[in-house]
Every structure is written in C-alpha cells, then in structure tokens.
Length: 366
Image 1 (cartoon, one colour):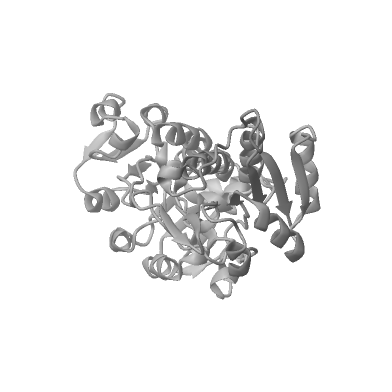
Image 2 (cartoon, rainbow, N blue to C red):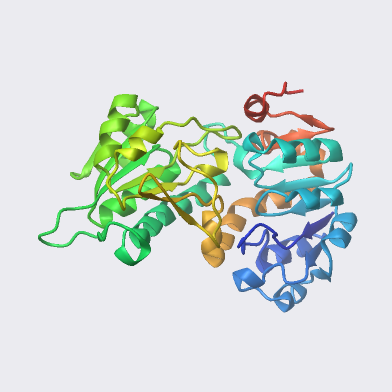
C-alpha cells in the first residue's frame, strides 16, 4: 500500500500524522510512504529523518494525494484540500464533521472513504485514539487557565497553584470524561478547589474513584441550577463535554457567563464539537483569546497543536496499529476485521454512514 503523509494546513497545527519510527514500521512491512516536504518540521522532525527511514519526499500536496492509497493526517481537511480527493482514496484523521456541513458535503462529493479518529470506538465504549488527545487537552486547559488568570493577560490576577494565606482558585469542569478527569487531576494537584459537573452519574462515580475522593473535589449533576450557582462562583470554567461524532449542547448560558467575576477565564475545550458555552466561538492558536461579558474566553479547536512534539508522539502511538492493519490487510478487509475501526467510517461512497454525524448534520445515515 502507498501511504501519504501531507503537511498540516490548519492554523498553527504543527503536529504530523506519522513519526519516522512509524514510517520505519510501515516500510519494513513492504509498503511505500510518501511524505510531503516539511511535514514534520513543526514537531521537530526533519525531512532527512523521514528519508533515512525509507520515506519518499514529495513536494506538493496535490502530487502526494494523487499517488497515495491512504492519506494519514492529524486535523480535518481544509476545503481547498478536498480538490485533491478522489474516489477510491481512504483518509484517516480527525474530522469533526458534526459541526462542519461544508466539509461533510465536500467529502461526500469526492466519494472517498473518510475514517475519523474520534469515532473509532472499542466494545467498552472507550475511544482509543481520541483518549490520549483528550487527556492532553484536559491538562492543557488547566495550563491555559493558569496563564490567562494573570493580570498582564487581562485575568483576575490569581495564581491557580495554592499559596499559603490566599483563597484557593475555584475551577468548575463541565464533563467527567477523559478531558474532564485530567483537567480535574491537574487542578487538584495544583491546589485548586474543583467542581466537576456531568450529565452522566456513572462517569462522575468513576472520576471520584479515580481521584481518590479528593477532599477539594466536589461533583454533581449538570442541572441548570447547579451549573448556574457553580459558574457564578468560579474563577475558571472548563468545558469538557464529549459526544463522539456529533455536537454538544450549550449547557452554560450567556446569563451564567455574565454572573462570573470580571477577569475569570473560560476554556471551552469541546469547541471542536460546537462548544458547551453559549458565548463561545472558535479561536486559533495564533489568536486564541477574546473578552465577552468581562470573561476571557479561550476556544481553540486544536489545543494539542500547541505542544506538537508531545502530541505527535502520543497520537501516533494510538493510530499506528490501525494504519498498519489497513496497510497489511487492505482497507476493506481491515474494516471487516476490526469493528472499532469500522465505527470510524464517517463518509463512504458519497454518503454519511455514521449515525451520530448524520444526526448532528440532520442527514439520514445510509
């Protein structure tokens, strides 16, 4: 099989879809790997690192796409890249189609088989590729909040790490999944008072057990009343709701945001699914912050892109077994063999085939 590795084109997206070590694995399996020039530079990986492992360097994305059987990316395609797609090609990347009808339509028009990292799902309901990026996002959310709480950044002038004699920072996390857990864990370890609210009682119980029922941890159902009272007293609100393939509801209203103290910080870490906060709008790593209702908002879709070396290594550790499986067995045989991988198919034969994506887009799954 010929695997193509293009350079990422999303704003400040410096991750790359396969490491040189991954290329080595694929080459030793008898496959060809095409790498667009400078694809790995943002992650500290030179073209020479790839060529030394046997990869073939390609100058343009158009040439790479036209010569490949499988395209491996990190983030969703930009619309102009869809001009390079064709029937018979398979793509493997994050897609977030539930909030991107234009991209969904472009993928349908191209008649590619588009497999999304975020909807690959194991029998126990876990998401093996999304999980490491969600863990990283949760930790980054706390890191971001720490930075923007400082006065020079427009924040309230508070330190998230606990200091003797000072009131602890109050962090409210909405969502008790992987991102929520890791955000809570880091914030608690830094000395913050943490409240985690979730629509799912099972997730909350698992989170409490995982955090050893920490004395500074409060949990509760994400009811409108509980959200309102918690958000009002918060210094930091982190949105960490997840609905694989779909879009998430707006759980925090504008009036709740308005009730927050001036200089507080919101990190909507589920903005890739539309965001769970009414005042959220997508921002970028090059322009990440805006002020709304006196509250700083950070709503970057590709937060792990800020730490590309760490993120690339973690992502490829999760994706490479699936890439290798598709290369060795062929796409259709691999999909038939691995039920989790098959659940990753979002678009096939010009149709939306994933139920949650179709529901979010108001399409009928085919």
